[in-house]
Image 1: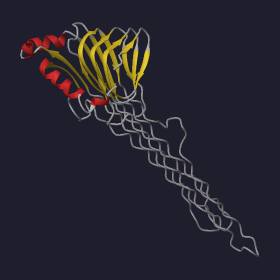
Image 2: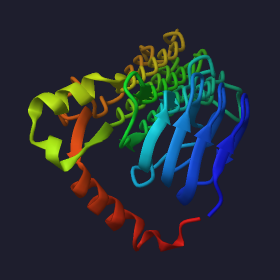
Image 3: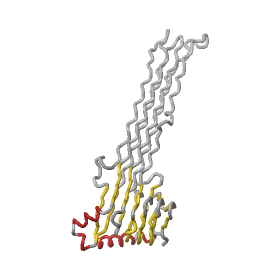
Image 4: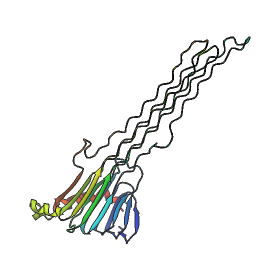
Length: 317
């Protein structure tokens, strides 16, 4: 049961999973990095100005986008910044459009005596549809339990979903086949549709619990005073939806026939891709309780702590 101790300016990466330690101590300007679902149980927690806990991962899933801190004594926490913003989804902005349609085959002139009519041309190929932008990564959900935290402690939490990626532009339609003396030109190919934008990443839920002695828990004024004794800044928001890609231009037509029939048309333009869907977060019409600072009684908290540190957490490091 090793401790997690970082000196001034040090950085340490913590493997995803559950960790049981005696002491969690983060020195000035130190950074504890996690890359997946992580839970820390500690007897004591200490952090000072510049100390940070930061998510640096790659495409969290809904099942592992959490960071939980269960502490028995947080009196050593004077300042702590925690960042769990989601990564943006892959964007096709500036990456080039989808494949253009091929040019239609040109008509040929008669070539007597073998070919009295000549070969008819062909329509231009349709442009390919743009690829979809990738959804933004959801932000991390945080549960921070800070019993005995000292008055004046400053806790800052960022949990902003990643922006959705922009969809790819559709390919342009191919040029219609050109006319000959005996055949008219052909229609141009249709432009490809732009790819839809990626959905915005969900906001993170942030819950911070302080702990009051049982004899004070029923006193609303004392609970409010405990909450007001620390400085909490929570920034939780969903990301921006990705823009849809632009539709490709329709291909130009071949020229009308001189003798042969045909009045070809240019291909229709492709439709623009739809913007990405809106993720779940404040002001999105989803869950209301996104950020909460509250107080638990000491006996209830210790009961929760004992339940959480037991099975299935027996394999915690």
